[in-house]
Every structure is written in structure tokens, then in C-alpha cells.
Length: 180
Image 1 (cartoon, rainbow, N blue to C red):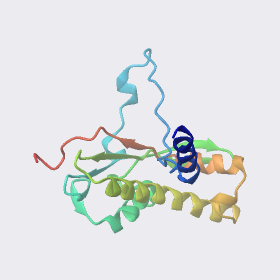
Image 2: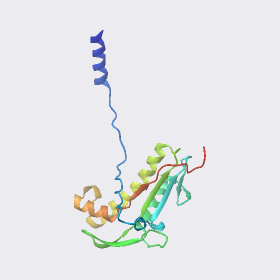
Image 3: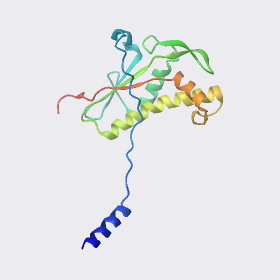
Image 4: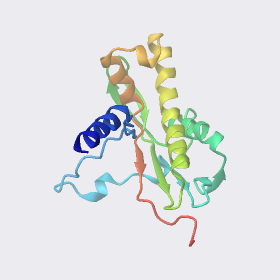
């Protein structure tokens, strides 16, 4: 009886497929320096794109009901701020290798979900926001170096990453859509 149980255990271990967990690549923010006043780290409101998903899985961008297929374009336009609109993100001049002194955006995307948001919707929103930033990086790579972003060496990738840093800040989920 013990032999049969052992053989069944071996069979099930060998025949079972193990799913690997997948997740989102995120870098946690650095611990704030206690010697630096907190007001120094305050972000200007015009630099923040507020994206919220309520309990009904409806997307709100800057308080306006928005279709999911519009999110990438909205984020793209917000990050780029090609016409330097006063209600869009500020830019600051920095020196980046391969580019010299350039004006880069101070944009931050703030994402907040309701605790009732479906996981698939959460991932779809994440994908659209990341895709907007990825498209900008790829376009800059093709414009400046003539090749796609994925084919660049690490130094050039780093320069383009510095050009379009744009952090995606995730707030703790809460009840955005009201009581259930």
C-alpha cells in the first residue's frame, strides 16, 4: 500500500504543470531623506495626470469619464506636452548623454483603483499607461538613433529612459465609486 501511494505521489509530481506567477515590474520609491523638508518633494498639480477606476470598472481621467481606448493617447499627449500648454506638465532643462541639454517633462501619472475594481481592468489600465510611455521611448529612439528602443545598447536605453522618466504612482485602493 505504501509503494502504491509513493508511486502515485511521484506520478502526480511529474505530471503536474506548475504555473509561474507573473506580475508587474515596479520600482519602489526611495526612502525620503529625514533631513529634507517634505515641502521640497511636493509635486505641482499641473504635473499630475489623475487616473481612477471605480467599482463599476469605469475609467475617470482628470475627473472625466473616459473610454479605455482613449487612455493611451491621453497619457501620450500629457507626457509629451508638445505645445507647452500652461495646464500640462512643466519641463526642466537637464543634460542627458547623447542628447545634451534638453527640456524633459516633470509629468507623473497617478493611478488609483477602487477596492472593487476587477483585476483584468486594473491590468488593462496599467498596460495602456506603460504603452504610452513605451511608444514615446520607441519614437525617440527611431528619431535620434534610427533603430527601435529594444535594439539599443544599455547606454542609449538609459539616456532615453532619462528623457521619458514619467513615474506611475499607485495610490492605495479605496472606495472611489461610493458604497456597495
